[in-house]
View 1 (cartoon, one colour):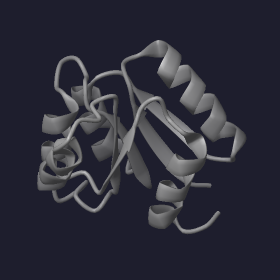
View 2: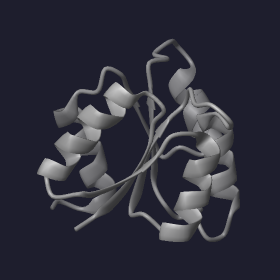
View 3: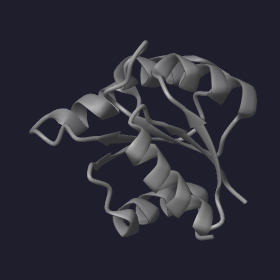
Amino acid sequence: MARILLVEDNEMNRDMLSRRLKRRGFEVLIAIDGQQGVDMAASVSPDLILLDMSLPVMDGWDAARHLKSNDETKAIPIIALTAHAMAGDEAKAREAGCDDYDTKPVDLARLMEKMERFLGAA
């Protein structure tokens, strides 16, 4: 069972996505701000991180940079989840260290395809 760290401050988005991922057999761990996400990634070593980019305490851009600069967490794939869907946002997410990018509202089928590329077909 793949362990997914969902870093999302919006309770409705967090609840909806975590329930849908759990139904598909994933173990879902939750952080509600960027700093908590960075700390949890180092302590629990998830298989993949779904990272909202607009977060309190530490935003997703800085969290991705921290995760990719730390030897303990740099190999963990990060998929940026953001409502920012303007030109240049995907490049900005990748420059921050995200391995992929998906827009909100989340299209679960599309997100699952991206997750499977990193996790292997489940």
